[in-house]
Image 1: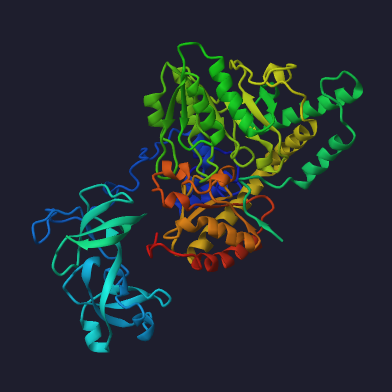
Image 2 (image 1 turned 90 degrees about the vertical axis):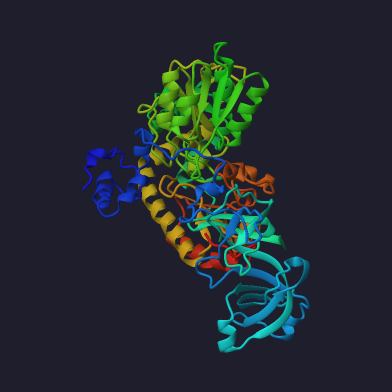
Length: 225
Length: 387
């Protein structure tokens, strides 16, 4: 047991325990509780986390992927700024898409869990590869679908709905490795980690969220190259 | 019946306090400066209250100056200290997350020639004493660091920073409006020179506050007149308010510890309940070093909807706030406090503050935990990211 003399003896209750002795008795099992001792904070010259007011959204604050150093160049030798990873709990990269004919979402009765095929035609992204994936959200009013791009194995085994061409409106994913600071409102070149062609994309970051896994971002205004 | 979870904005007046004040509203109307019996009775009640407020923070009664609000106390502390400063000390250092009562006063002083420096905080809102060691020097007149932040609840290392200021020959002020009555504050244990208090934050009345001015500290008044409050705050005293303030202080001294034990239990129940029901919820501010009843939450992907959430909760009869009540009229602006913590402009819009108090119950917490997920789930999401 942490000796009671190490606690201030204020018996102030701010830790959630009626007396310093009661807190001390809990510290063996729950040492983190010491952080709740606010009078101790007030009296002790404890070091606090170094101030870093402008860095919370900067990539260098997050765990950087270990391993081979990136050259930050795509398969066509073009530079990019970061890799976009998919969320660990998702089966694949998350895309927000809309069929070229949004009515298809209703006509095909697209539902969460459906397996689909389609190709991101045109200026939204321009990838020549047909994609396969599983639907995770549907908005039947607008036709917008959120899906996770997986691979052809599922559709082959279980059947699928074909939406033909679609527009890729946005990506969501994680940044764990970047060579620049990531700021909301800026356009970047990035490399989707699972892009079959390993072509760089570009997009505008309009959402950033710090998490233990990395920077969660949303990108819209997508182009290849 | 409204569930009131906005105790950091203001707290309900304790019925015992209201009862004590009633007499002074109704019959005992004397001016404490008068020499007749009504006046002497009023003076006696004011001095009793002074003793009670002083006892709450370990001060001498003569070190308590009654004012009309925490804001006025902050103004008097900073402007009064600078006005009485020797010419070579023109530096004012305040943290970037101070209440506007401090920040705006500091900016006004800058406009009159003072040198203003804003101290940064880390991602939990904690100030770094080492930063102050590097920046407080022989030109610094006053350092101001709030004891606990009104928006995020983080409790600051004020004793350590106060010692740094003292070593450099500067004054140390703390805006303890959120802390006094909720945390043990002992000005005898730390070299705090000036400390602001507001009665309505701990079950006392609005319209009355106090500034602790350590004996020997040179301060110039900002309100001039009849010389009340040792010449530091001229104006006839708000006797009923001061009586209520005194009793609220006494109750805090006697019951504060028990209140805190209960509030921490409620706080943890609320945090754990919300986290279990809303996976996208995240806590803002330091997890442990926070005010006993203070919960500041964000909902990942829905930060832009904080106002909508507050309104939805209000429709359910649950009173919470976004950011601080004082900035509610500027709700469209990202919170400068969260920006100082490193939040981007989007996320800085997203804090929802639920602050518990003496009169909240476990049943109320459970009711909020039951209602909140449905309301959050109904909000538009900009992204599907999680905390």
